[in-house]
Amino acid sequence: QVQLVEPGGGLVQAGGSLRLSCAASGSIFSINYLAWYRQAPGKQRELVASITNSNKINYADSVKGRFTISRDNAKNTVYLQMNSLTPEDTAAYYCNSDLRDKLGNVRNYWGQGTQVTVSS
Image (tube, rainbow, N blue to C red; front, side, top):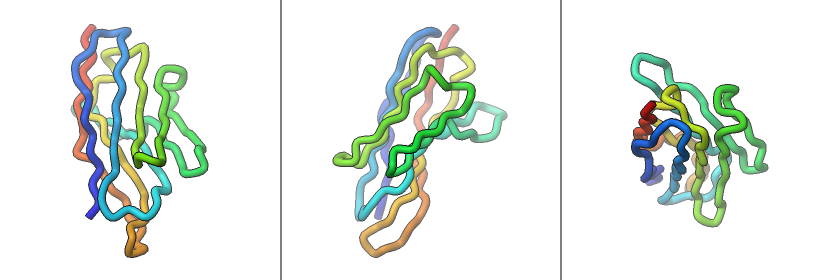
């Protein structure tokens, strides 16, 4: 079994920073793609940032210049450093990954989500 575990999240004031992490564990052979999505109440889930195994990075326009995605391959972990947070960043943040398990299956996985609340 594979799990994506996301500790972190929390409450921060506008202008502050927060770092999210997501660790993949279980029967993992390789990780192809890691991403962060978010979903605010009443809105659709949206891609925030993604990083491939060749370190190709993509950001949503709304977070460019403020958020940084990175990965630690040795730890099967992806991070999201969030700076200059605004109340519009308030949402549940979800980790997402395409990975190959040790049986050779390639599947997409979601973390359980972590709440980020930015107060004005």
